[in-house]
Length: 57
Image: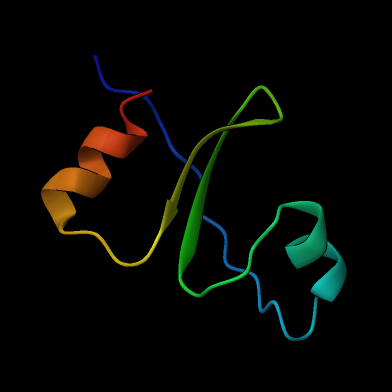
């Protein structure tokens, strides 16, 4: 059975505090959270198949 993912988007120019907190230095950066903690990080775009793998945490 599949799980559900919530997706959010943050403008790091308008939210510099979040960019600093999570070490975002390039766009796009994808952060995967589980239980409130970052469990995976990707800098740069990904093909759909790799994104699906990344989300299969």
